[in-house]
Length: 624
Ligand code: ADP
Ligand code: MG
Image 1 (cartoon, protein in one colour):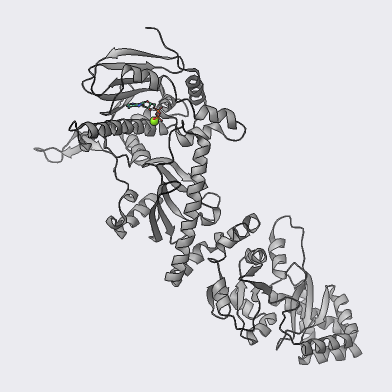
Image 2 (tube, protein in one colour; image 1 turned 30 degrees about the horizontal axis):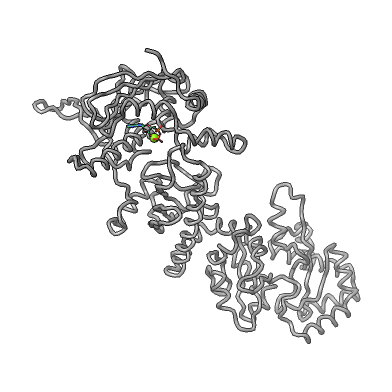
């Protein structure tokens, strides 16, 4: 019989698929099962109209592996195909779709990746088989036909026999190669696991004959094997059930099974939306960050289903980086696994879903924050860091979205507060939101430059993470209140009188201050207007704070950025009088004292304090 040629575009796709190194060959089964399910749907709806008496549970999909002949058959009792259907449907791949996409976007996207994601339908069989046979009999017809093809060469269609309506798609598997094991597709466990992974929520039972063992009836300790038809899929996806039909236990079990977590999720979010795109989402906020969360290995993303069929294991486009901790899935009938759809349109739908998912996560976090503060703090301790990075990323593009859900340790409450908590607790006279950087809140509490703020009862946000200060810089203000570092030159807290007094003293001691400055080799030595009980403190002038210096100089290749250091002296402290006396009598000793004070101040700030051996020698010298 003469072979018919595939339509040209089909040929090209076939070549593309067969000859490319395909990483995800196993999706062929998902495609064939989806086709079987579609065929059953068609018949089921057709018979609903016609009243043929067929019921939903009359339908099934069968998988049969034949190891001897190396064949795998997917059978269904769906609508089947006429001779014409076979020609039309299997002789050509739907016209639009991949090929157009490929030629239009060849430079932008990896075509294979796209095929991998959106499915290639029936032809995917050629990734694992060198021959495909389709035996089909259309519902309501007495004639059956056999369509056969061994790849790009073309196909034949011939009359055949089939007992009843439906279709058998038989793959003759390729021979195993060095790095490809096709035989495993005949293994009952492998098949069961593929069905579980990709087709668990197909509405009709997917059955296969499985070999099992049982004790022999009349003999003790002896077993016999027998075969039984097993259903491999669980059919109803939990997320398709109504919320009130699902128990907490079920949600929990599903989450733990699916996302390999021992812990219960901190929060479960399950909802449907209809509108621009319709989808169901089942999302979980884990209680604990997975061990690899902060590494590159962690794969951020949600599972993407189309009508219960898994399209992507981890679709990262569905989650922004800063919500990368969310696990879960999206099921949308609007996202098709059919490549004949416009892929760019897919893209737009994904984007719409992603936007809506993001909004939902944000509103859930706000809800948690207002309903259960302690739980939110637990969450924040695990996943606060990505939120803060989110504020800072992309030059602050998302800061408005995130500013309400980030937290900082506060000095007054000794606990995590949001920016609106802080703003709400501000005394009337307070105009700025103050912050100070340090390793821990306890260390920040000891910083001399926070004294004046604490005395006034103003709270201070403790910036303890590297990213914090960058976050503050990018936010710049919250509800109209500017952020201000506790170490800034001018905290705006000093009265004009006090200022004049400080200026007067500065003039008076100008020479001494300059001498100290030059001997220390720093930006300035100043009379402080902020210190209350401590003798000195170290601050920075200009944009680069001491804390940023620490962060930046820890980065490789930073080339040792340094802040402009300023040593502030408390003129009201008895030590100041000592310094003045030394300036008159013993300038060498003054320099030594200056160096001691500077080193101390640097140590308190947790900064590189220079030569500590010299420091300790100098201290000893003073003691003897
Ligand atoms: P798609 O499913 O995206 O339309 P496929 O390449 O998977 O594309 O299948 C092509 C067509 O072949 C289907 O649209 C359907 O009409 C037909 N077909 C495939 N498998 C079956 C089947 N098991 N029963 C009936 N028709 C089928
Ligand atoms: Mg299909």
